[in-house]
Amino acid sequence: MKLKIHDAKGSATDKSVDLSKDVFGIEPNNHAIYLDVKQHLANKRQGTHKAKERAEIQGSTKKIKKQKGTGGARAGNIKSGTRVGGGRIFGPRPRNYHFKLNIKLKRLARKSAFSVQAKKKSIIVLNDLSSVTEKTKDFKTLLSTLKLENEKVLFILSEKNDNAYLSSRNLKKVKVVTTDSFNTYDVLNASRVVVSSESIKQIEKILN
Image (cartoon, rainbow, N blue to C red; front, side):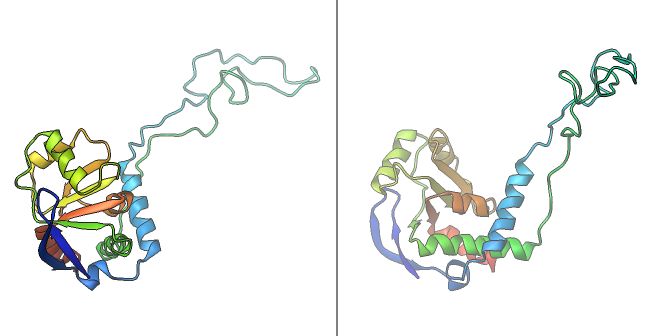
């Protein structure tokens, strides 16, 4: 697949780039995508949820009424989970949601994500972003030229660019990452993926 390269101002140039079929043209594996996205979201969870159980509730441990002869159900103390104000029965406890996946499966998931975006023709190639300043106004101008003002956009750069990060961090629908930090969730969560020409080579090298 060939894509035209755009310059830093957003205008299309005469140059083009070939996308590798092994990365951008495979048959997407939906289960691999599901597992990788599930892992990403699970690993972001803090797992600090906690509810008090009956042993942790403050209150009297005195038996509320006698065991037999009242005509009602037997009752222990007021901290019982069946009573208002009592402890939670089998409540959530702090836990770690992290789990691991094989590196081959993660690579397959990322290839699948790029292939999905390539099929939708949602990938745009930029020459580079070296001329971008730290002003948000300039970054918005670039988005406007590329007709991406109202789109959710992921920028994948070959190396860290402080100006690109600083100028885009106030834009809610824009995320800037490098080739060593992108993930399946970010690629699929964006409606358009903007990659630099240098980062394409790095992505193909990483995923192959």
